Image: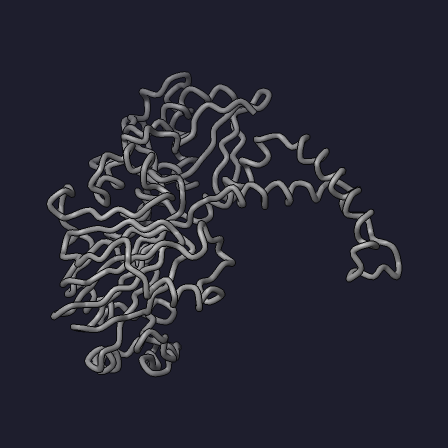
Length: 417
């Protein structure tokens, strides 16, 4: 398939959401820090503070008025996560749930020095839904957002490392961060820090590479694997952790192996009675397998790998929320003269295949007449468009095309249309 458009491939310098989180130009961040080394970004060197994203008053609203359930809240005492039955109860009349967060229980635990972890805020809180969507699009890697609220002079978790990159955005109070070099560089998701507990404890006793107090508006970037711990100072502290689930070369390996499974010679049954513990019995089959695998891997087209990896990225991030009822009404009533635009953050691949145009979407694929190609390319370029002014199609056909894309959630009405 010949590709016409892809929404990601933007310039590294054209990343305003990344620029909110780092105090260097995005191209410098990409070349010198991304996946390599930490970066502290003082509030004075960032475009604006983070009080538009989350405040302590917002945290209280989430905990008391939004009907949160597990696992959207975790509570930790002295570094250990406590059982959810200590802070949840039934939802009351008309709410047939047994695990709704109890605000009075949470208040009591927080007063006792427990740290609160609000999880999955990229699915709950509108400013963070927008931040995660835009950041994921700019980075090309899926992102999630949690919030950590720590009582005065308390520490939530001991030194540990994450298997994803992290942007820390301090939103309230002060927190002292201590960062140490990795004990296991570039960990994969299966390389949980508990497997390296002794090395982590030893490394945490050494001099840190960063020992810094973050105040509201400050930010910190940590590549996966860097050890870190944080302690609140003399007041309640809250920070956002933006976790970036980075794609790695191992993801390409996984995609290659998944595709290699189509080769029958790699699915051959080993002999009856083979002793799998005997290297001498395994060796000849291993040699044949490596030979076949090398041949098969050399025949796999990059496009097949890209499709597998792409599906993983697309399923890990979500586009701009849309209003289902309003969206259905817009699709039913759309007409010439109405304005529409690409839904922010929607992932797609547009290309020609024979006499058709194929629009690949997360979990879906639309095959349309080739005559719609110029109009589709215009609609998917990102700018607002007016029905009736699209190239290559008469007005009535433009309405049909736009209605289909509205119903598929690819387009949304332009503001004011």
